[in-house]
Length: 113
Image (tube, rainbow, N blue to C red):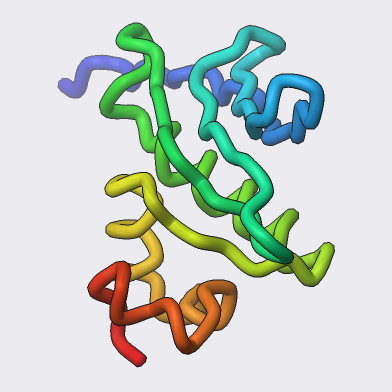
């Protein structure tokens, strides 16, 4: 006889831009679970730092934040300078996002040209 399976409730995740704070936030059920900071650098957006709150680590929050932020920037036609090692690594693992990094800047971030 099998034990009944527990169902984990699915949390609502949303990524929002907070330009006044210079960051994208990911909210889980309304609470800020992480953020990625940015600043304007020329015509691009420099992503400088990413944080996932410890209570949310290991749940894919960082990846969801990276995807949500980069999707929003793509929609706006904004190029990205990934100074943040997490975002840079995420882009390297998801080459369909390489086009967001200016071609002439990719070598600087150890990304394929």
